[in-house]
Image (cartoon, rainbow, N blue to C red; front, side, top):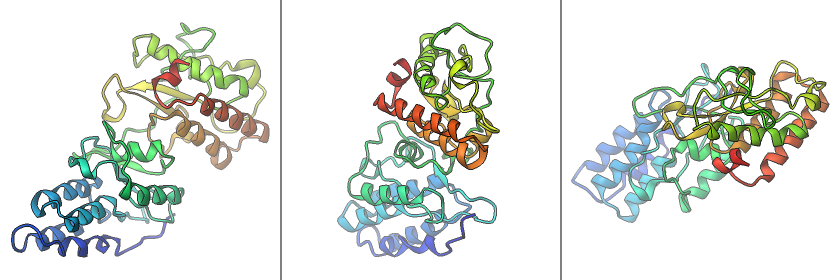
Length: 313
C-alpha cells in the first residue's frame, strides 16, 4: 500500500500566491482555497477548476500561467490507509481553459506505474496532449497509466467493473451467437487475438447495442487446454460507460478480478496489458497461458489503432 505523502498540497501554493495580477489580495485568497483542493478528501476535478479560476481572476501573465499549470499538474494526496490508488477527474470538460487542457497530474511515486504517469506529467506541462473530448483520466489511460479510480465533477465515482455476462462482442466465426458468456479473448492464445479484434467489431455491426451478441470463448480449440488460473482473460467493447455518450465505446476486462481497479479505456492495448499483468499478479495462470496472452497482446498492438477501427479489424 502506498505510504501517505503529507504536505504535497503545499507544492503549487506559493506560486499562486506570488502571482502579481488580479485584484489586491486575490492571489492569496485563491492560494488559500487551493490547499483544500489537493487534500485526499477533495474531488480531483476541483483542482482543475481552480486552475481555470487562477487564469480567470489573476490574468494570463507568465506567472499566472505557471501557477495554473502547476495546480493542474499537482499531485493530490490520498488516504493510503484506505486505498492504494489515487482518484483522477473523469470530467471531459475540465479544465475549461484551452491552455490548461492536455496536462496530466503527478502521482505518488509509491503507486504502481507512477513512473509512467510522472514522466508524462512533466512532458505535458510543456507539451500538452490533444484533449479534445477527453478527461484527464482518459489521457492517463491512453498513455499507459490506469492504476487509479475516477470521480466526476459532481462527485460520482467511476463505474464498477463490468461483469462477464454483460458483454459487447461477438465471435469472429459466429457473430450472431447470443448465448455465450464472454467476449473473445483479448489475451488468450495467439489465434484468439485476431478473434478478439474481429469479435469486438460485431458490437458495432449490431448498431452498437450495449447488449450486443457475445462471443464463444472459443478461441476454443487453441485455448481450451491453457490454464488461466482464477481468471477469464477476456475484454468487452461497450458504449455509454461511466457517463460517456452511448455511442462512445470503450474496452474493459470482463473478469471482475482482472478488472478490479481498472477503468474502461478507449485504447485496447491498455486492457490487454492489464489482462496479461493480472494473469501473473493475481490469477495464478500457468506459464504457457501467460505466454499466449503476451502473444495475443502483441498482435492486438500490431493492429496499430486505438479507436473503433480496432474493433472493426
